[in-house]
Length: 447
Ligand code: SF4
Image 1 (cartoon, helix red, strand yellow):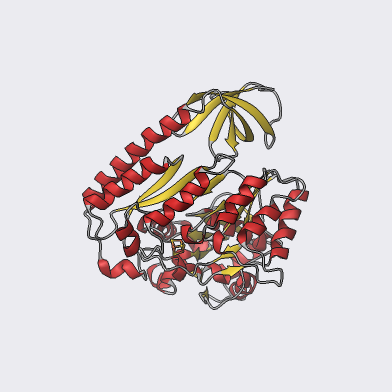
Image 2 (tube, rainbow, N blue to C red):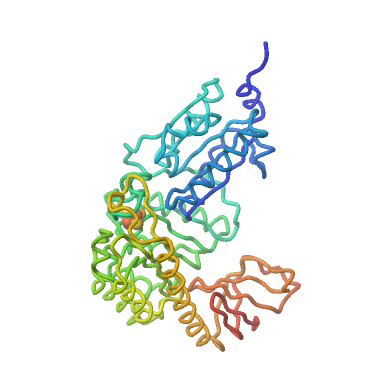
């Protein structure tokens, strides 16, 4: 009897995983990879070598979604016959079983709320099931596994909360990642201690909205308390967090940053628009004035805090005057950097019925003006840093430029020369800033 592709693949037990999208997805892939390794699978570097091909997908914008289907299409035509394809993450949750219609060679479709069931789903595939799904959002637990595969020996992501209970009108996340679920403070602290024991000195706490972290255990820690405690673990030198929702961003978080030098003085606080009427349409739950109040807390802090943001241009109904409000907000805050996006309609979002009212051409015009304005701000701010002494965490090396790649505690890239022959990766080096560009700084090590 001829062996079926699924039976043959079960013997191979190799997997490849490609990740699209945000840090949450990158960290989810580390958890998925760790779970697969624990189940006896071996990770390989290309889809061609793999028996199982996982695409961990992002549906925040149409482009990212399209990329996944292009990848699948490629394998439909070529070498895909001896492989099992799994579409996981946000596109999987959003499109569900429709993915099987669009790409019939896919065997697994699973959203992030179902990753804890991955071992059972693999067993079903190995038993010869042609299609398995994990699409339930009916969960009260954050996915936590001791098997997370972290390849970076110096810094690590650590999820503290999953899902989102906000209902920003343009956003698919509440639909693709389900309701908010916080991990207990004990489990977060235990994992953070393990990371410190393994030599990692930098931890980034992750969640769609870390500020709404609520410890479900009797200890009842809020986010500021958790942040402060992680920053006090021996061996941990830098703690970052991402992402913050302005409405839940409270003063005790600033107090923690002020009083604990291991908490990085950088806050990413997505504003999305400088116009209160657009913010209302986006259902962001704060006004420009309330947002600016949080900015003032940071500007008045005893430690200088770097502020970065996200902006969407071309939300339905955004007038020229609304857009001007966003531009003057940039000047008022003076962000150290920002991510700007053109609005695109996403399925299952409340803003879907508003359609796409601003033309693509106009959105392109607005985003170009915005980025140009922000570039000037960054040049201005970065130039002020020339001569400053910064401590950088060394993350890599540009051999062609003969420079080390470092990151300041305010999350800026600071590349530096000197000390070529030393093993600096993962260490902390004092660097004097000598030059500044819009997106990075250059300096000399001073030790
Ligand atoms: S806070 Fe808003 S933008 Fe952020 S994940 Fe939740 S719904 Fe989406």
